[in-house]
Length: 102
Image (tube, rainbow, N blue to C red; front, side, top):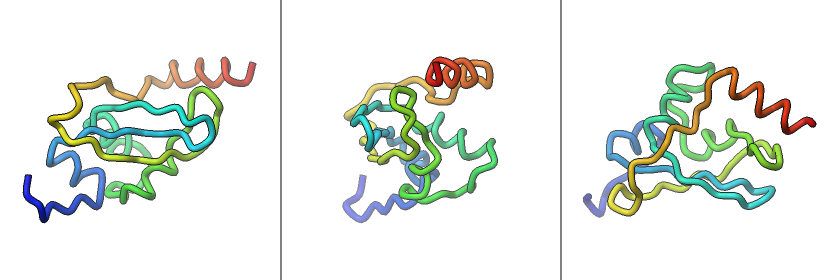
């Protein structure tokens, strides 16, 4: 990777094979996800297609504390393994919301 590499959007990060670390500002829980799943979350939903990294973070919600928004940090491909997709099925999303509400 070149020293002049500019990653401004999720799709720039996807084209270079980066992983994504999402961190909840509320409870400080952090998780690393594969960029493909995060990019698909924006590609196939009603979200801005080419969101900047700062804007993209506002679309996530913490499963533990329910805080909306997350800090997005890029993890170089050589420092993180192939990771799971953060996007759940609609059924799993509804079940998680029910558990959160109690």
